[in-house]
Length: 203
Image 1: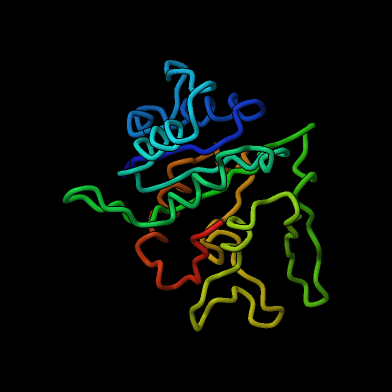
Image 2: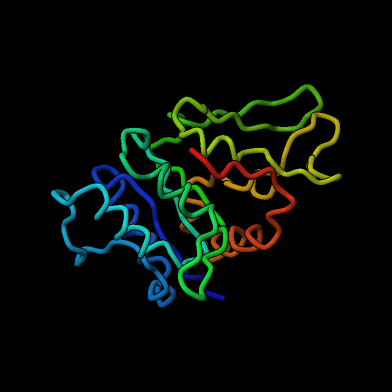
């Protein structure tokens, strides 16, 4: 089932990937509530006007897709958009619930090694290391935060499932583009069990 979705991204380096995601969503792209090529230019708007416009786009969505690009931390808005997505807000009789959030790691110079490295543990398990210095606190604060009795995918090495062990899972763009609806739905499912996660909702 399609979900109303907002895409958070750094325009100068991730616009093309945003467009590709929308193309891959096909007919489900009609549920997309974020910026498009036809959106008005807000470059010279005040901070308050920009925030209000973004609030209007995010409010009522159920999933936020965050494009993780090399210079994401230089954005003025992405961490704020994630914070707004994770909080609950009420407008008149409507309450916007906590969004599911999925991070899509952008391929850069033909690789993901600007952010991701893989290691083989002595017990045979393969683990993935994410360079947290490249991420906002609100992103890595919602990584590996599943808090259930069976939270570890491998109790021996105490590793987390890459998709369900973190409220904000990070998926390489090639995997995500193979089936974006699957990952959007997974993020939505986690938004229905927020009590299973230690959520960090502030930047």
